[in-house]
Image (tube, rainbow, N blue to C red):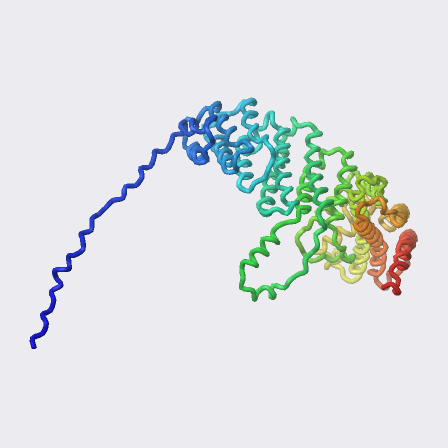
Length: 527
């Protein structure tokens, strides 16, 4: 049987249609508009175009010549108005930045600078996509704060309003905390640089300069009086976190730890500005500065370490450390007597019930300041006793204790600087802090707080807790005195100084008056 002939498939190899090369017709790109055309397209009454505004911002750095100021101002006024979308406002400020930073940008007369400056006088608001373009335009217009003739006072008010808007979000717990903190940092540093220039400062009235300190003080009070005190979270060993594989949880934890408490931010702003202005501020401002520092100290205070001349473990400087350092410099400066008078006044309960919580925080901070004042005298005595003991054991050929060469800190604590000794309590001799006079003030203040009625307070629990914090702080002074006595060597064990013994006895007597009623309320039979 003959096999079936094999089919010839060669004829089908070309069955497919030949491929035709087709070129897709791309839409023709319209030529870029010139700078003049973009300005015409954005000039009112035309509706602002975001694309045109961004194109103008990108084209201006290369433009020559620049558009006339009379043509550009209406465009910027339309783009930067407060009711425009945030993206349009940001593009408008980018246009202003590009114009002012151009090498051919003409110098501005006072009326022209005022016309451009009016673009920033709208309602203050903060947006993550707006604050930086707006600030860069502001900085370019003022040439980094050097050309502010005629707008000095308005400049201060504008920067303050932007800082306040960013700070409001921190108080409310809004998102973008890290960016808000960066915004406050950038704006406050710019304001500090402007106020550091001698020429504009000479044209600013004293009350306007003082208003900057009052502004930062307002931020401190808002954060201290409205927000709960921060609590130190328990330390978590890194080994407990190492087994976790979810890196997103770790990154979110890191972002939380990077943010600061609003009070810490406000306190830093206030202290930085205060230190820069101390030499020019009148002593009369101490009546305002010290109570604010007392409130801030009360808010950020933590348990004090035991008295010791040995250095404590190194740690990052906290808000409490910064405030204490500033208060120490004030109480050891040329107005130390006035500072102590103000401090003694605020040791007592408030007489004005309108701002009772502010007064409670002020008194708490005053008691902590008073205790620190006493502790410095006690530490000086401990340091001197330590040096006396050690110097009797080892001497160098010159007769100086050889092993004390590196302990400069102890020497400074034992014998403070001449200025401090001349003006502060440590130069009084005896017990070192005038226990006979100041100790009497302390015991009288405790007696007044024990008898103080909290009926005037709206939140009586809060007032009661703050009063107990004040009494606990007042009780710390006798405790510190006992610590200093216990630190003495066996051959130095003597009785307490008579004046200090009176302070300890009278303080404990007044505190017992407060504790006895509490013992009756919380008797064992009722627990």
